[in-house]
Length: 184
Image 1 (tube, rainbow, N blue to C red):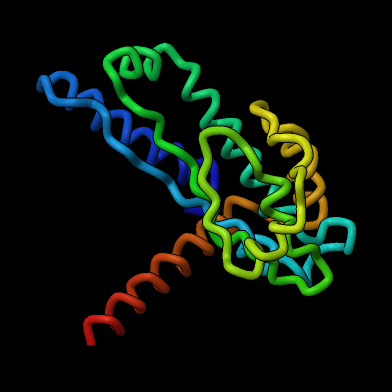
Image 2 (image 1 turned 180 degrees about the vertical axis):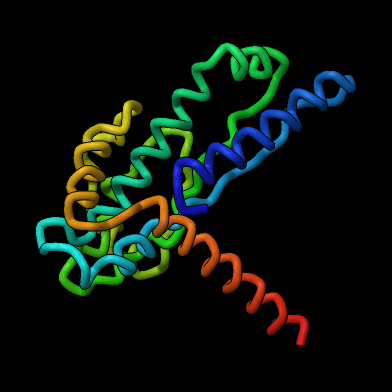
């Protein structure tokens, strides 16, 4: 997935499925993640934004999505299924290795450390992280400054909705191609 809207679609499907399991008398404890690809955002706009915005779009999108997840977890609808034993669907931060050689290896890991998330660290990022004893502040449940950062990208001419759709299409095609290659 590449945006808050993509996440919300997956979260709605997950929640609807849990509600159906409860209605059918089935166990609602189902483990699930929604993968949000981070660094691809920054790679897609690297040559189109001023230096002060470099490597910030993926983090802003992740913060916006995390805020949506935390809002969902506090909703009465979620609380009902949680009371029946449902587990939260966690956000999985994927593509968290930095592609920009000028950026710190731990850029995304440090910015996106948060409860109810999973981070799939590439080996180089994991090795870089091993030297730290403190990640710093946790990602705020309210998304922090994400909307202000996204407004700066809009001023720079980046339409995140159009870009999200393009990245989603490219990502899906990439997975289909990989599957076909594997089958071949």
